[in-house]
Amino acid sequence: MLWNKKILLFFSLIGLCFLSACAEKEKLADGSELINKNQFVFAASGEFKPFSYINDDLTMSGFDIEVGEAIAKEMGLKPVQKRIKFKGIVEGVKTGRADAAVASHTINPQRSKHVAFTTPYYYSGPQIFTRPDSKIKTVKDLKGKEVAVAKGSTYADTASQYTNKIKTYDSDITALQALSGGRHDAVITDFVTGKSAAQEGFEIKAQQLISRSEQAIVLPKDNPKLLKRVNQSLEKLREDGTLTRISMKYFGEDITSKPE
Amino acid sequence: MPSFSHFFNILTETKGVFLKAMLLTLELTAVSIILGIVIGLIFALLKNSKIKVLELISDAYVYLVRGTPLIVQIFILYFGISGIFLLPDFWAASIALALHNGAYISEILRGAIQAVDKGQLEAGRSLGMTKALTLRRIILPQAFRRALPPLGNQFIISLKDSSLAAFISMNELFNVATTLGSNNFDEMTYLLIVAVYYLLLVALLTFIVNRIELKLAVSDR
Image (tube, rainbow over all chains, first blue to last red; front, side, top):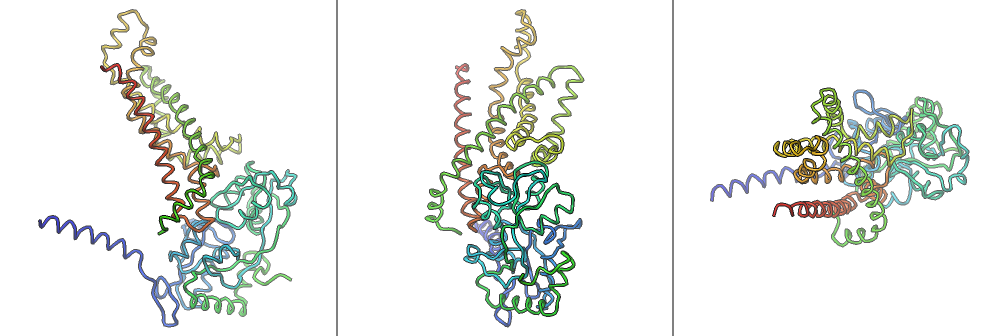
């Protein structure tokens, strides 16, 4: 009899340990919620150079990372990077694995149903990339061709408007690598990402810039006070030129201001 | 956690997409099993040949293939050698899978061949059969029967290993599950659905292997 009780106690203790893993977020004085009181945990993929990439010591660097760290500093919090595969970031923020995501998410209505967006922190756009000898120039040439994109990206939706032969990879860089190696007919990704890959030696050429897009920081919908704080911090960073400085560092131009 | 009715709705809605992906998973598995058995048999016989050089070749192959992760092998065949030679994605995946299976199957078959009573070989030789003929008509059929349970195991592993083809953008079951899951911001439901499909396939495979075992066991009566 005593054995049964001990076993029951043992398993319920284990069960409790699992439950505590789904801990509540900490609530602050101004009503905003954070996973840890003095940390700003922001997610990025690390697979979208130059916006986020992994260093040899396995920490992340890049435009998105520096913006995330600047925002944390502005809010008086310690920045903590969290690497999540891009396709899982929106759900990761929604379920509380990170406080926010600074991962080049394009604002679109589909995502807005599940998470909240801040004001845009940079302006860019999807572009077609091909091998240098390709005849594809515009979206019309994509019909019937095989296009590779990153899973969970808006580029996958864009591609599906022009062709139904779509191949998905976990990262845009892998897609560009495959293209460079001779597979698929085109890749649709951010024009900055493709430009950066070409500079690193990928055998790719930029074609039509399909459209313009606005990228913003992603936050959970149930945390409006934190959204307000992040937006306020973003505005400060715009005013004092920090965003522009980071942009010049990575791109030699200011992509954080709305293009004319 | 998603509700049961939500799960069922999506299951029926996505039937078409998943069935198409299931076909691809089955194709990958079938090719890798058939090729894997051929490769496994060749290397098992090499190992049993009593010729030192051939045994070493077999050892080297088994060590290399068992000693590296399958995903590394798939990436080498897909990305790595694309500088020299462009393998279509289906063949990159199925050849990597076949080579991988072949190593494990060669060990299974080697063990099964060695387990057949020495007397069988002696009896064959004393009837005037060559070693090769004895092997083909007497030893291998018996060995194959013994090898069925561990082979069946390997087939099931092979079926699940086919999911790694997702990382080279093939639209088999796992890839479809993660793509739809991220498009609809609902990873959990789609992962559960694909788990159901894999369970069905494994049940089918187990059934087939059991039938084969029963058929071959007729000679026991």
